[in-house]
Structures are given as structure tokens and as C-alpha cells.
Image 1 (spheres, one colour):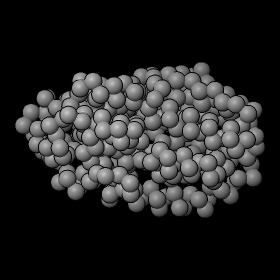
Image 2 (cartoon, helix red, strand yellow):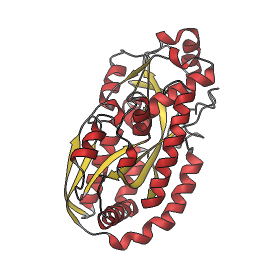
Image 3 (cartoon, one colour):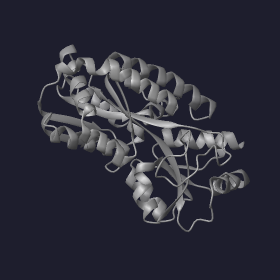
Length: 322
């Protein structure tokens, strides 16, 4: 797992390497974006931000977004690998959540079968509770978990994803056996949000951007964030400040289907680089509280392989994988 300092260092290095290939960029008539999750979640938001910026920058004519939800991407990935093979101008949006979910679900289809194009964004996670919750701080929630974790159902994304990993890390730091944690996985961010607003769960974990509107409206209370330090414009302590020695950043990126030629790969990498360099993309990052961590091509492929090994070790340690 990597933290924000590593993210920013890698992003700085990528900015030197990545933009060198920008000359390959060309306009694409239609970009096909595959989202292995339900509408409303982080991957879906990323796909729609890509479409918005690329159309605005005239890098593409149109975009088609296909959503195939389930099991943190383990349902959609086989379709992308099998049915989307050799499709030009196609990309799947995925990230750390899928890496963990594929391991937890013992998926026979691997992310390594795709063609890594670019890592785009990173974001810390937020721990929230309904506005009327008795938990005023993260310590209150952790104390309740220590007393009886079964009575503290926590909503998040699919099993084995970053939300689940963070809860496991919180539990481990607090001395709670991972198997006793009460994690409620949802296929999309919209479903988890509905469960929180309907008081069906005690707490929720996701990217801050997915909760920000409801937090600002006073419908959810933000207990803590998983960043390494307090974030400007966000009135919440870090988990570490709250006495929970945990820090975690989520990352998202794009992948081409298997069978992409070198020329197709270069075109897609250059397309993403041009998008990432635009002021419109920078505005999207700011608006959605995402950190830009561009890393492209072979360097990104190496990162994905290393991240897979790192997350597998963490999931085993937390009892979330065999």
C-alpha cells in the first residue's frame, strides 16, 4: 500500500516521463469506457469526468459508458477481458478496489490480462456516520467496535476493496479480530449512501468526494479521514490524530483490453496525458477532492504488479484472503 508522500513523488516522476509521448495524441471519434461497477461510485464518477474533459478539450468526439457492477469488478472484468478484447479506443476504469476484490473473490481472471494505460487519481478515504449517530469521534466508533463489533455495521464498497481494507486496518490497530468486524459491502456508492441515510448501518467508508455533499448538508457526520495530514477545506481530523494508527490512499486508473497494439496503447496513453495536462482536468480534481498522480505505460504496469503483491499480503494479514 502506498501513502500520499509516495503518490506525489511518483506523480512528479511520471510528469517527466509521461508527457514526452504527448506527440502521439490524436482525436478519437468515439471513446468506449467500461466501468465494472454501478453508477454513482468512484469509478463511475471517474469515467464521467474523463468523458466531460476529453469532449471539452476536443480529444474525442463522443463517449459511451458501459456499467457492469458486482464484486468490486470481479463480475465485470471477465467481460472486459473476453468480450472487449482487441477493441480499439476502449478503456476500463478500475483501481485499488479491483486489485483487492479479485484477490478476495479468488477470481480466475486477473488484472494482469489487461493493458495498463495510466494511473490517474488518488484519494484518501473518509469515515462517516449518520447525523444522529451517537458516535461523535472516530474513537467513539472504535470503542464500540472493541465492545462488540457485530453491533457496528459499516457500509462500503465490494468485499476486499479499499473501504474493506481500511476497516480491517482500523480493526487491527484497535485490537479487534478482523473476522469479528461487521462489514456490509455494496456494489455502488449510491447504495452505500442510501444505507447510511436510511440508518441501516452505523457508519460508512468511501472516498471523501462521495460523501462531501451530504456532509456539507448536515446529513452525515465526518469522523475522520485516512490521509497523512489534515486536508485544507475539510473539517475533520486524520485517523492518526484520533488515536488510530492507520493511513491509506485509494488510487484509480485506466486499462485497455487485451490485444491492444503498441500503436493503440500509445494513442490511449497520449490521449490521457493530454487530458491530465488540461486546466479542465485540474478543475475536476479540485472539485472532486482527488489528487492527480499520473503514471503511464510501462511504469504504470510495473506499479500495478507491485500493488497486487502488496495488497495480497495485506489482505492475508487482515484475514480477508487465504
